Length: 291
Ligand SMILES: [Zn+2]
Image 1: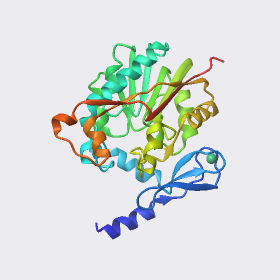
Image 2: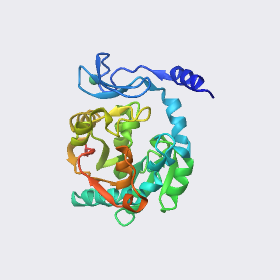
Image 3: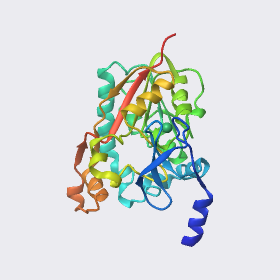
Image 4: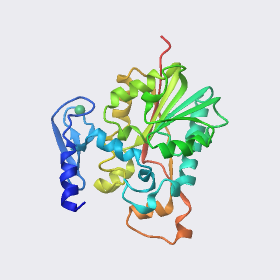
């Protein structure tokens, strides 16, 4: 396909959404990205979202391709998911430790958007039952090797019963087209008294503020929603969760990936160590009330 044909195909697949949180049509454009894409800020509620965006069916088709995880949709050859394995495992280990400290581990775990299953694997000793969902059939196949039960596609594939004690979606909600429906689905799969945990890039974080529109999590077309703690906790409350609290979520990255995002290259040996970045992800947990 020529570049001109590709551009025509993309514009045929674009849509121009209202604010995904409050449905307002009033917006500013503080962060122009590449091509047709900008990050809009809702004038009514302050929420940030991609505008325009690819229609959901076109985006989901990309997620079904395993090449998404090997840098295909991200556009960086060296940011592949497997290259980040040890940093991701360290990140999830620390997340699980922070959940255990708050009494959120034990019983049954559902992870929505489990990728290759690194979190499910690190959670082996902390939960009795581990279930995941994953859009890519090949990703799901790899995740099943952790002994978890993994459904291909999204949460709608998970039976309504039995429910889970803890439902986690990390680095998923920024890809979601209807966030309120999504968080309600997470809550519907959670037992009364159980918890929903959501983590996503923090548009209110120090890293974003330092980098402006060069912030690596401004990713079009795949990141369609951009939260900070205020908008994330408001959405979780709106979905009926109670006791919504912030969860620390330091994120480890391979040094080589960070330098690549800043446009630098490093010798492979130097690129391997992990760097902890504290202010790039916002995470929150909320309780499904017993009533
Ligand atoms: Zn709004």
